[in-house]
Length: 264
Image (tube, rainbow, N blue to C red; front, side, top):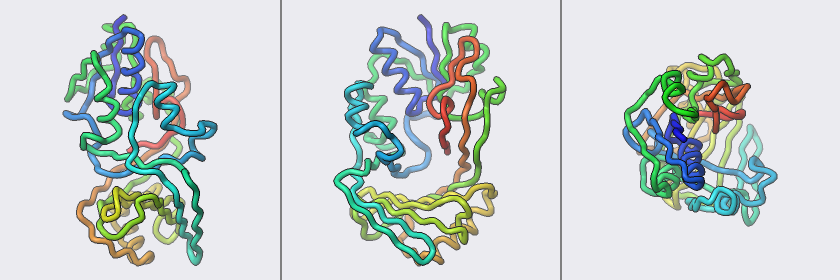
């Protein structure tokens, strides 16, 4: 059986790993020339969002047969809204995962567990041509282009993210979030630590331009009195949407394209 996967992201690599377990060796087509994310950051996976799974790491290990190592466990949630601060603690709210190009980043952890999958870098294939060459085509690049062409994409929200790597003093088990219409409208800001000295700080503002996000970023830092040392910054378009149906002929839409999800 010949299977092509478009996108070497979390869902594409995980799909390849599952196919290998059944003796199928897919070909993965990846636009970038490396495995990982362009923007270095830490992402938070909260148990409340993964319900009814009691523990995502055990699910990855026992059901997906993947060994995934987090940066740390989330044991403290700090939430800021105008004039209010809330803190809750637990043994385990979820996990922090590394995103970027590092060897232990989330995507590279999955890629390291592949044995026979061929990954072709710097490739942006025509999915319709692939659908004639392969028995099945798995679209897992998290982008709306192909679903739009197939007429099954519904956008839910869009905007821009401004992110930075910052240095200061952090609790490596604490996730911090901010909400305020003054600088993020109906969006959000959050901080995820790498360790006690380094953290990932991100702000998402919906329905603004790339130029606007710089203005809201400056307001965010000023209003919240954030004075961390900024070592690296990036801005990237962010959108959330869903597809229906998830299969068109021999083309499958999976991962972030198969259910409501956010992408950047």
